[in-house]
Length: 151
Image 1 (cartoon, rainbow, N blue to C red):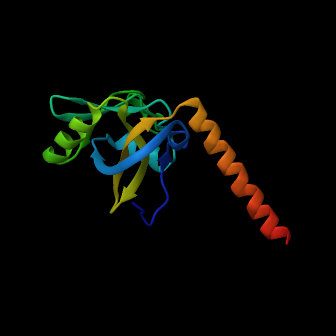
Image 2: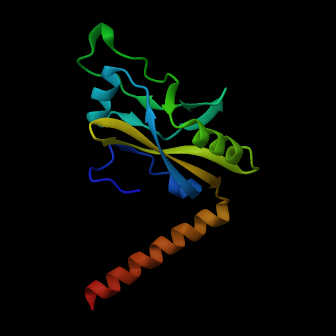
Image 3: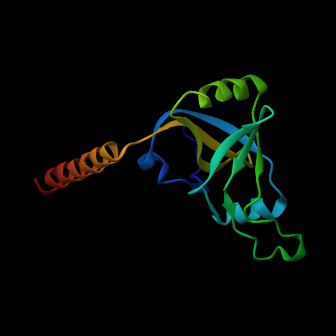
């Protein structure tokens, strides 16, 4: 899924720690100061994950920095936030997350038509050997690009 605007906040470690199987777009319930803080790139998805309780999606462990002009109306930094998707999509995700080894992780916050959306992924954790292979592959590609540039 590509969008015209760059991500407000992205989880860069996700592709290193997990093998991404499928991605989904979801809405998110936010307060005004949270949106302003996200537009200022004041958030982190590093330790965040997605859980399903009572057929509702919840984003847990996400940090959205307090808005510096928020005063008494500021939000709690690490509260659980509800994600919005169609019921049939949530049921499909619930079935997938119950498979052994699969988890739901957030990849990025981005703007779409003036609203903040979140890209979540169905993912499988990588083993240490897989991570080493990823690093080796990345270094090989970098060396090839260098060689082409210098040739």
